[in-house]
View 1 (cartoon, rainbow, N blue to C red):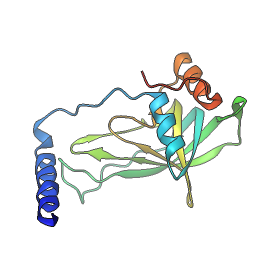
View 2 (cartoon, rainbow, N blue to C red; view 1 turned 120 degrees about the vertical axis):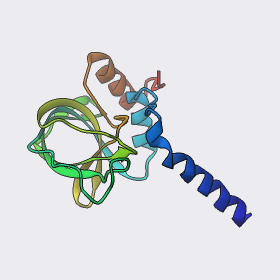
View 3 (cartoon, one colour; view 1 turned 180 degrees about the vertical axis):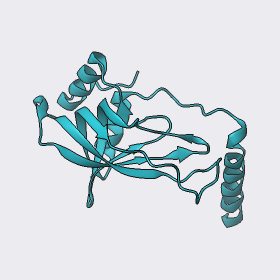
View 4 (tube, rainbow, N blue to C red; view 1 turned 90 degrees about the vertical axis):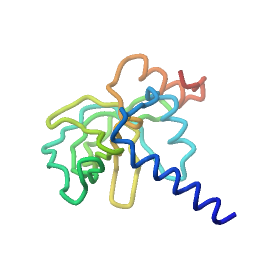
Length: 162
């Protein structure tokens, strides 16, 4: 059994090593799916809506290679609202650790400067933490439909992914 698992893991890793030859294929991110993931997680999450300011995005670390760059973490400044049982309510400004991760050569990124976001932010021992992966599964450009859907999820009213 152990050799079967080792073979299965090796096969999965081998298939990932060829990822640079193919385009990244992401399932369209969905706020209801992100809400369910955050709700089911052991970790604590906040749903934030507002403006995030990324002062600088440093170049990728030289420890990775072009097909597997290292993630980059920066501190960003958030101003806006957090989701509660009564909808989105204003909160104090936050400093958020933003990690821009990669899957092969494809990397998630928040552009330098201000951006409007709807984000699922993990509350960690080191403070609020946002993972920006190449498929943008935890951060969205806010629109009225997504805002209404995530508020419905919070109220327990139909939270089915599209």
